[in-house]
Image 1 (cartoon, rainbow, N blue to C red):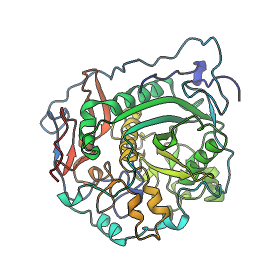
Image 2: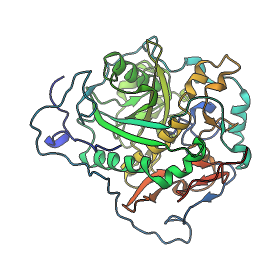
Image 3: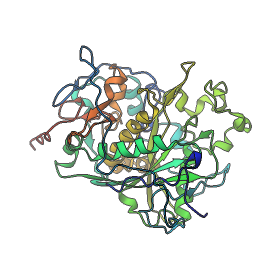
Length: 442
């Protein structure tokens, strides 16, 4: 490769900001416990949403207050020119924003050591069938749904990289700037992080946004879990991830508008011979191309998921993937289009995935070792029914607009779209708080 990545219409490379999921689960009962993510419809008993320090705008009887867009500490801009091209080789400096990374060649088979979990594990519930039963029954919002620490890794100092699939042709400059410029302050916000601190013994946590990159080469119509694992394995094999702290970094794959995401373990090209006939239109008339047995796709309400890939050298690479969630003129949807502006849906999806990836990064190790009766020791914070910090709020009967919403930043510099997490302290959904909760007595 040579030269910088460019946006459509001739815009030069986007430098990003120098500062710093959703596992798939369609409507409850539709897929294994570990594929937790956004259901198509909220379901199950309601749970209280605690808004601290004050209710957010937009709720019943609460006037809608329009706040300004977030103002990052360093506003991302698109430069008119750059004196020298940025590095584009595998050992590039990760501080070089928007240098293009390649998509792997299209393939029908997966790399032998790259898959994050086996096909068998992806079809059913690893280990305990009780998890599936509880999920189907939509267990009530009681303290029994509180998250429990299982002994696995958690990530205190998180790094993340946004990778825009087909970023050189299918993403607008405005969307990239809004996503990068809103996710970073959301992940670093003091009041949002105060809710998370209860899962870190109230010890300080941090989040650092590393430079974004476009993934170039082609525009996929469908992306499967197998494809994402191939993307990760290919970038690792080619050396593009060499300079990162892989134990604490999550690579976010952002799908372009119109691309459908599935949980299929196969590569997209292997699903059906007619998969290439899927037209990326607003009607999604060929939705039967992805078989129902694949248990979930973004056209039926899945926004994304997170996981990990085992590399050839036995290491781990953490990833998340998010859909460009939008609603079309004929009322068809792709992903979870709660906000009118799709970029806000992307940010809320990524926020969900990143807080799950940091509190339960090795969930797929439990899946890979499902035959081990002690496989749960690989898990971080997970409820008895197998739900992570971002999942249970989406399995309630409260409107999604109450769960995914814009919240004010603690520094007063605007508001950001997020998905509110589950809080053990209130046994339900909780918004930003000005002070961390006291830890329970032991």
